[in-house]
Every structure is written in structure tokens, then in C-alpha cells.
Image (cartoon, rainbow, N blue to C red; front, side, top):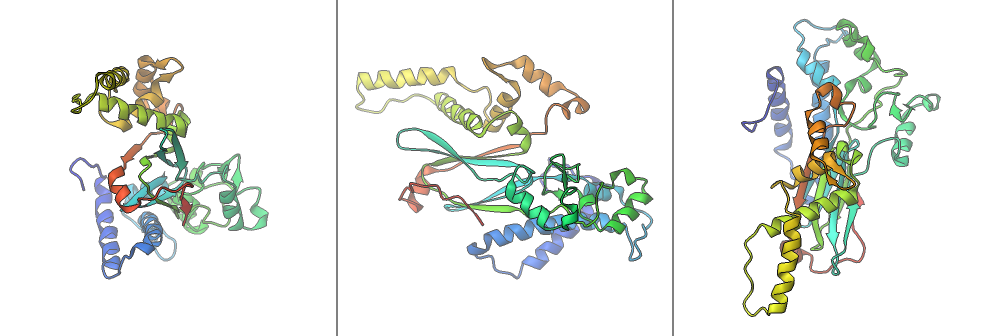
Length: 346
């Protein structure tokens, strides 16, 4: 663990127990590159299994709750999280997504025109393939109750997630645990044939090229305020502003006309100089505080100072990561630029 990381004391033994067992299971197996999607899928499912196992340890073989239950572990099993993860090996990029996280890669062509390509598909009611998948896993008699009001069993928005084991455990085990702790209000309506939820990721492979400049991964909260295009523009704006902060040193042999053009560009970039050294902070700042006429610091302040109770009705939590690619390095491995994008599901 990093010294700054936080972990509930009661969960620490289980974290290390499951991690140790996972390492022991994997240490003797080879990991060739062509198996990366399988390894990512296995890692997601194994982690979700361990989260579930922590909660089920409260039951004995007769579905009776044992004494000295670790309520922190049970709470972790009944909580949920969506995840997107990227793995880069030279020019091979693999992005695994579970839930309604978002991600895209931004590229620039020879004429300086930018474009984005989605790398993470949302696992929600709005995804026809996802709806087909989940409905096919349950009897036809449940076709009208599996997804109600755009939510899983009328409650959960993402159709894939880690944890949230009340949508995964067998009915009798779930009822035994919830009854013992007087939590039957957490029992999902129309829960007849679980599991309804899975942590299995959808994995997309993309062959990186020199024109691919950066990738952005985020939780769903960011794109309640921004589109892929607007988020990409904020990163590009930050890139230009950061360059303006670097010392200006003209090349030898440059003409006065060329120098004048460069200085004008630098003056424009200086006007867009970012307040944040970190590009992810820059994106979040503008997501929360942007208006039609620019950044409103009052709006940003109100968004950040809202209490936990108020904030949950205004926005989802935001986690943003921006990963920049080294074009010169990519060019060594992929000298030929494709005319069509190469992102594809695995």
C-alpha cells in the first residue's frame, strides 16, 4: 500500500489474504501477450469473487449467520463500484471497462484536426447489446422486471459492477444475512433468479499510432457535464497553455517573420495559461465551473463546498486520468499511419 492510502482496519486482513492467494494461484503460470484480454477478465472476476466472499463468510453451511460478524466486510460486499482500466505494452493498448465509466483516445491528423474515439462502452439500459445480454440470462417471465425504469431491478443504473452483492447472491443466502442484520429493505424487488449483476469487463484492443496523442479515462460523473469533444478540447487547451510556460528559445537561422509568427502564437497561448499544473484537475475544474462565457469561480466554489448530502443530488463523484503518449516512441514501432481506426472489442 502507498503510505497515503486509506483502508478500514477490519478489511486489511482480508485484502492481504485474498491478494496472497491470488499471487499463489498465478505465480506458476505464463503470461504471454496474446492472453492479455483473458488475464484482465480473470483479474476483474477474481477481485469481485473476493469481495463477495468477504460478505458470505458471515454464513455457515446451514445459511445461519455466525457470531462475531465483521460488518465492515459485509458493508463492502453490499457496496458497489464501476471500473475502467488501461494496460499498455509498447503499441498495444487494452482498455477494460465494467459499468458506466467512460474513456476515449484523442488523435490529430497532418492538418492539425483533432478527433476522438470511444474506448469504453457503457453498460446501461441505453446499450442494446447489454440489454440483450442481460435479458438472455433470465427467464422470459422476467423480461418486464429485470430492467425497470432504466435501472436493474428498478434500482441500479449500471448493469455491470464490482460488489453490490445483493444483486448476485443466492436468494436464501441474501435473505439470511439481511434478516439477521435487519436490513431486509435492501432486498431487491423482483429478485428471483440471481445473479443479475456481473463484474465481467468488456475489453477493447487498440493499436497505438504516432497520431494518437492522449487517452482520458473517467468515472461517469464527468460526462454528466462534458462531452468527449469538450473534454478533449480542455486537455488540448491545457497542453498549449503548458507549452507557453516553458522558456522561449528561438532556433538558429530563424527569420524575423518566422519569429514574429511564433511570438504571436505564444501570446495567444499565454492567454490560455492554465491555473492547474495537473491536467485532470483542469478538466474537473471546468466541468464543475464552466458557463457559456467561461469559467465561473462562484459556480465552482458552490459545487465543491456542497455537503455530502447535497452533492449526491447534484453530481456523481469524478475521477479523471489523462495519459499522454510519446509520438516518437510510437513511430518507431508503428511507422505506417492507418487510414481507419483500429479499436475493437476482444
